[in-house]
Amino acid sequence: MKTKLLLTRAVIEKATAADKPYRLWDTKVPGLFLRVQPSGSKTWNVQWNRATSKSIGKHPIQTLEGARTKALAILSDAATNGTPAVAKSKAMIVTFEDFMEQRYKPWVEVERRSGKQTCANIKAQFGRFYKKPMTEITAWSVEKFKSERLKAGIKPATVNRDLDRLRAALSKAVEWGVLGANPVAGVKRSKGGDSTRVRFLDKAEDKRLRKALTARDAKAAKDRASGNEWRAARHRTLLAPITNYADHLTPLVLLALNTGLRRGELFGLTWGDVNLAGKQVTVRAETAKSGKTRHVPLNAEAAAVLKTWKKQGASDGLVFPGVGGGKLTNINKAWAGLIDDAALVDYRFHDCRHDFASKLAMAGVDLFTIKELLGHSDFAMTQRYAHLSPGHRAAAVDKLVRR
Image 1 (tube, helix red, strand yellow):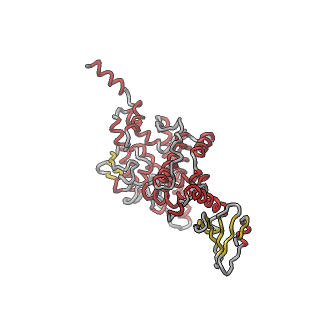
Image 2 (spheres, one colour):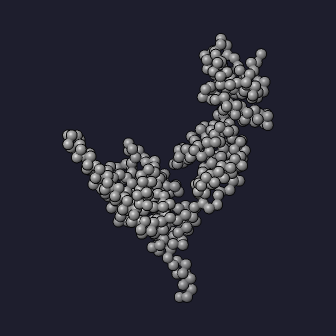
């Protein structure tokens, strides 16, 4: 005889081990049962016909609510297709979390440089979908997410990037046979994004930024000297004096302004990529967003910054190592403080790249050269700087007169 009852947390906790395994069937979701072993372990299972069942997780790692959600999805699949997909696959993919953790995350972290960051972002923004069956992620639910984010004041470009990450993940779910169709495919990107954003520093802003960097380094040097006086008075080991840069921030910012390298490209830069004699840095394919190697020349300021920074720290390995010598992951806190000190409005680290390209365009450098320096795979990305090129349209028209 089946033991049927409305399963609750209290009922589950009170279920003690017996001489033989036994089952507690849930009346709320017929087909779901908890199997209790003589050892005391408890496992959730779902049965969709008289002869076939499958384990869907162990208690307490798998919660009652989660077990019901998974069971309903499998039972619904069985009712529609006869044999649920879970019975045809070794790895059970029911909820969005199952897909992310079992399939997408292991793949994207190997195939994409930003894989870990992508998964973290998807979880942060779309955590509401994690416990839901994949089939419950609909175009409407995604549209609702988009609407809520925009109403909350989130910039369209940010919302679009979030949707792009989700769209890419669910496209893989379709490709791998987990989903029949991508529910985000028909969700349009928000208008008003900043795909054509060009933010560069005017002379006053550039001066304030550099002044803030200098002041930051000077303060660090002063604090270090004061600290060493305190240590000397107590016969303690002195720390190395700061004679140039407080840390990696100043050389990072100045190099970004003078080379247009992306943040990830700077973080992955090694001293082996730097040719000071030839005044050139190489952005390797594995660190480049485009996946292609490119060579960027160093102007006088960029070369001087790297020479100074090399004397100050290690001369091999990463140019800008993080804690313990590993790769930097972010400079958010230091950057936020710098922007406040420089009184800059709406200026992101990536805008250093826009500044580099904008200044080149305004100096008359042709767009194809700017494209090569920036490493754009699509010329349309470079065309955003076309309006800054002084007189380029007038010069073209003027040729008709000279002819």
